[in-house]
Image (tube, rainbow, N blue to C red; front, side, top):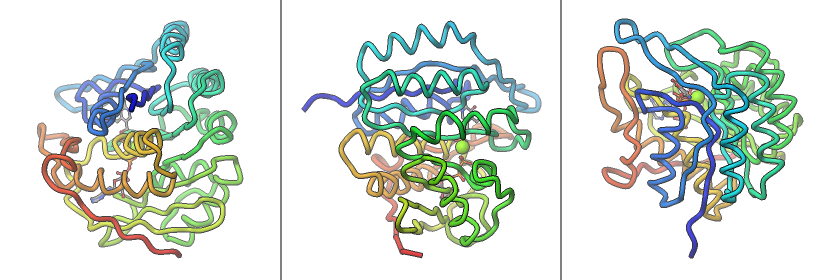
Length: 276
Ligand SMILES: Nc1ncnc2c1ncn2[C@@H]1O[C@H](COP(=O)(O)OP(=O)(O)O)[C@@H](O)[C@H]1O
Ligand SMILES: Cc1ncc(COP(=O)(O)O)c(C=O)c1O
Ligand SMILES: [Mg+2]
């Protein structure tokens, strides 16, 4: 069997728990071949860990996308895109490709940072990315923005948001209740246009979870490339990221990344599903 090729259009997280580094590590865990078109570079202030985000010139992104498309990715994932122009270019990359799957992780804020990267980005994501998305993976905050419903605090509100995001074109929606929803368990809601399914694992420590969202979306993309259905792909990805969070580690006084290889090397966490 030939190796599946996956392109991530994403930012660089120098600390390497999130961003394209998380994507490549995760793709490797699934024995898929990861490629990168870099959108932005994130550096952290060693004194405060404040994030400094520098988008790369669009011409540079263009060259990378041309290179990667010539290699022929089977699936494309997006992460931090940074500007409206880059969002539009990422959508075009999927349209110009022969990739069968487009996984959109609509990154709007980094954990520990509460400022939205750029407010106009939400409208651009709705306009350019949702209509093409095989799977979109918003966290609770991002789902509130993409649906226009604002703050979401209940499963019923998550269902409403998933329906609106689906109507905006995403074929499969998974809203990560995860760290943000008040609950003893880590709950994510999956919607395929017909059925709402709640995906559940235990909730583990949440101090060292940097990169959880990127890792979840990357694992979803790898599972799709390997032939799983979207439903199977998000269930597998949730088990993968739950293990990574349970075995996350302290990097310094500010941050701890997930352990991307924990599912394969340390412990496999089970996921339960229930229609709601
Ligand atoms: N403390 C936790 N224990 C177990 N799973 C978690 C925990 N926090 C988040 N998750 C899971 O990790 C994935 C990423 O969620 P989340 O951290 O909310 O996303 P993001 O990093 O994009 O904000 C989801 O599947 C979520 O349910
Ligand atoms: C480059 C980059 N992409 C994405 C993210 C989002 O990370 P998470 O997986 O924690 O949502 C971050 C956060 O620091 C980042 O630096
Ligand atoms: Mg995220």
